Length: 256
Length: 177
Image 1 (cartoon, each protein chain N blue to C red):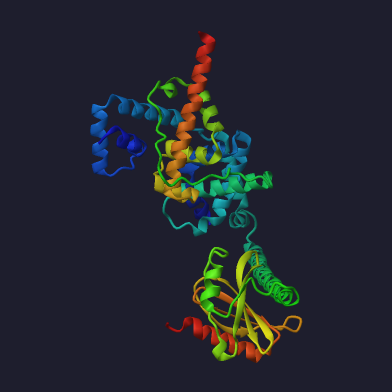
Image 2 (cartoon, one colour; image 1 turned 135 degrees about the vertical axis):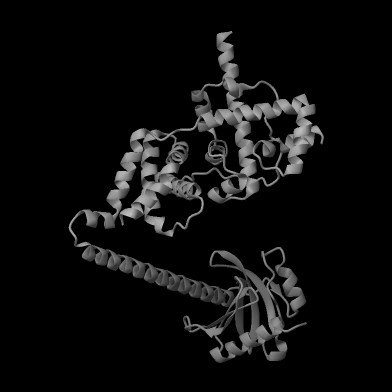
């Protein structure tokens, strides 16, 4: 073992973190090398100094903390007091249950309002893409053009499929910012109407195609498959949108 | 019911000094450390039903650490407690240089002042390693970072400590000569 290696291992050696073989190697090197041995001595001195800086708890603290703990103990209090510990306990449990229920309700409410915000964002994005000039960043009916276009614009690669055969030709795609992240928007056409398909990564697991409540007259369907979350927004009938979702899922999950 | 408190006391009392020491180093003063130890012990008592054996000291110190950090965050709202730190997974050579052994001659006050000057994440690693004798893995568990991060914090903490103590030595040497 040379000095460079030894020096890199001296801390782990002093901390007792090396395996037996390495430990012996370092030990052997230290016996023959004054410079490394003195580095080791310095470190040891520093460790001892730090150890001596330990603060012991003040004597009175233990007693006062234990008193506070005992005081906080409802069971002990009721035993020390009268024998009517039951009403106390029942009231405590009821309170705990109420708090728990409130907590879950709050969670459901928060989740619902998040979903609502997301639906509004998606609808906004769809409407914006139709009234402005910014329907697509890349115009192509070729999935092999659209898919690579997203590279470098997003931190994930959305599946892209042309569905002309199923009556939903691919028009193009653009990058969008939804729910605090960059997402892919794929644009499809259905008899002069457009479908925006928003895609971004989700955790594992899948979810059947499901229709959402229409937003300002636009239909929305959602699903999850192979690590991606999909939201399709369009003015076409929900039935057609469901068909689109099914066609897209089939095209992107069937073996190539 | 009496027994529960007794069990609790039996579990935490051996680690009372450790709890105080960590709180003292993380808060920087005795007054807040006392409050934090009390609050931590009350919390520990509340959660004691969920403690299923294992290392009681680590369990208690984790509670102390969480208690202190949430208190610090409440206090310095907006500012974050930790400096953003680049995680250095690679263990670089920041071993203490083989010049003079300063630490040996330094007084406890000087050493305490020097440790107090370290950034909190380095200070915490030094306290858990040098004072509580925890392994890298245990420190990683308590502080919820990777072992590589523990190693780099320790190395940098020790290096800074050495530098501060050397500077002290030089300046005080300059005055006496």
